[in-house]
Length: 239
Image (cartoon, rainbow, N blue to C red; front, side, top):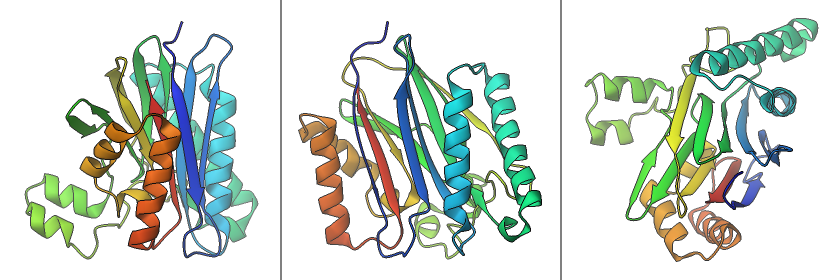
């Protein structure tokens, strides 16, 4: 059985007319917790269709999925091809795509699937780490040593995605495997959040919050002060 987990979330439209972010969370019959966030792309209203489609399909498939690395990547590919098929059936949606960061909490182990630049991070004590890697041009150049940390922060093409479900180019699917313990705090975010709130700030907010709801309120207050530039969504899980 799963240790007691507490969760809270927010999803805000920010300055945009349409919220193209989607999130979901649910518990299986045997007590596993599933969490997912997606950030739709494509404009003209189609980004929200892509993220909604993927989150809905994920909820159907995730509970019975094979959570090996190969099984998770196979699931990601299946979702990608289903989105491509929807584009072919509805040509007006041919530019839509979406990120996806999702996973399962089960018996002290977190297993996840990631594509794009949404994020999963975890804080433990004084530390905080990202469990996922942004699949962007800026991140690739930084990892290749072609950008310094300072250059990466101000790189003008930092948000050019190089992987997304529904994109023309074959997506990259990253899997996540992390053993969690009581007191860990997980953050599932779209880039509207982590463009404005640093990892260390999320850690600090979590440390002074008694529950996930308090953390969500603190992040929303901080986002309001810093004037969001995009939709922004966050799921906080306290183990």
